[in-house]
Length: 258
Image (cartoon, rainbow, N blue to C red; front, side):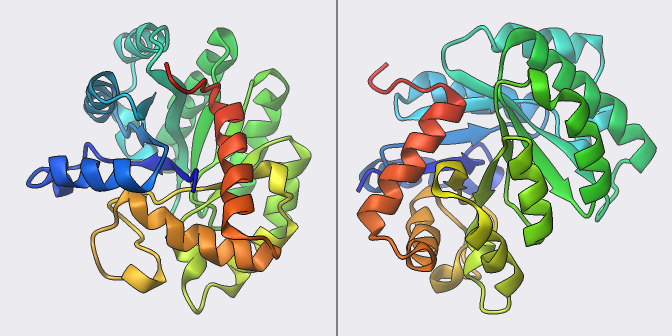
């Protein structure tokens, strides 16, 4: 099929009891998957998985929830990790105004520092955005011209915001919530995203797509999201998978069979 999961968290403790079985199912279902960090320790764990399994790649970075942990030492470590072939981007980084585990004012500095780092070392970025559309867009506009790639992860906004991101040359990634019956606004947003800018992900262990909703999500579940969006786009699943996998390889700079 040629599907990939562009964003998952296999290092999560929710996979601790049966990780080997999950990895086998992932290998059976997908060509490769990207394990994304959510802080220094989560990034370290993602990298360890990518170093151990050829079908996994790592993204390293500091989530807005962990903004308080971003300092010079953390930045130096991220810079060091990004020299490794298993690391394909910086992230996930961004702003979260929904939970605000870190005050809004304290999220911006670490976000901008990571964007500046990405521009300096030539790495794509993976963006977390929750209820922060205006501020996210204002910040990203300052860096967009120097970023080699940008993924709006687990897109949760409307079509107008999608179009604004597309104008900046970003990729837009949809997770299982686009399959939910009441998520028509997400499907409307997906309609405006051209196939050369579209990605699919699971954000596993979260947001299992509709046929598996309520269960712990796994990378292989990305097929259900792909099926939903392929139908929306009027494509076969095979053609949709081929296109989104090309996009993922392009933005992450992945050459298979490493």
